[in-house]
Length: 135
Image (cartoon, rainbow, N blue to C red; front, side, top):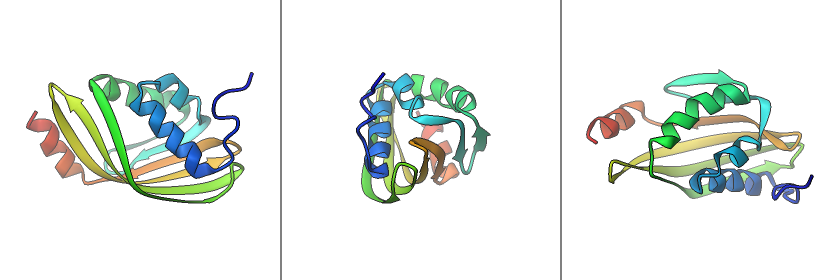
């Protein structure tokens, strides 16, 4: 069965579609874009391996937000869908309890065999903790 991502040949476009799925609350579709053994490294907090572990980490946090916006400021990519690397600079925004919490992110994605095999986000944990505490 063909999916909306089957026609994507550029890893940068693939990562952008992944982010759009998260923003549009298409969480299942986003998680189908990652490999079963994906490494998710939320650098200052935790690292997990496998799609199911990633789902456990992300689902509760994303469900707590009424809206999600991940604004990509810069993005570069290299390679193809067999082995590609994508790096982006983003501001991840989460609407919680009627206000927006913003987090500046540097993200790294490795696409391998047509799926995201590694997703690593770098951000300042202290800034994020303060933003959450002030809600």
